[in-house]
Length: 136
Image 1 (cartoon, one colour):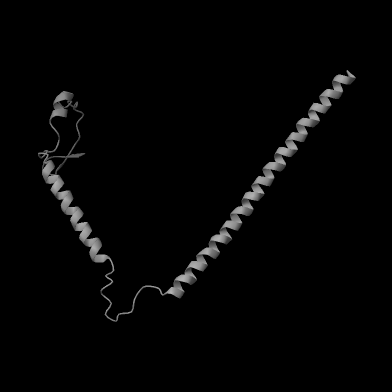
Image 2 (tube, helix red, strand yellow; image 1 turned 90 degrees about the vertical axis):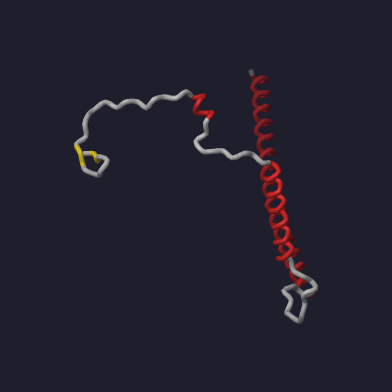
C-alpha cells in the first residue's frame, strides 16, 4: 500500500518506473547546487585582522595585571614553595631516569647475552664441520 498526495492509502501498482532525465556532467558542474557569493579578498583580510585584534584584546584582558595588587591575596607561590616544587620535580626526574637507565641496562645485557650465545652456537657448528672433514 502506498500514500497518495492527500495521505490516503492506495494499492501499489507494478507500473514501470521512468528514469529521470539525465543532464550532462558538464552542465551539472557549471551550476553549483547552492548560490556562490562573490569573493572579496579585501573583506576577508579585514575580517581576519578584526578577529586577530579581538583575540589580542582577550589575551591582554585575561593576563594578570601586576599593578592590580590592592591588598588582595596573591595566587602566586612564594620563593620557598617554588624551591620545594623544584626539588620535588628534580627528585621525580632522577627517579624516572634511574628506572629508565636500569631498563636500558637490562635490555642491553639481554642482547649481549643473546649475541654471545649465538656466536658460540656458530663456533660449535664450525668446529663440528671441521671435525667431520678431518675424520671423513
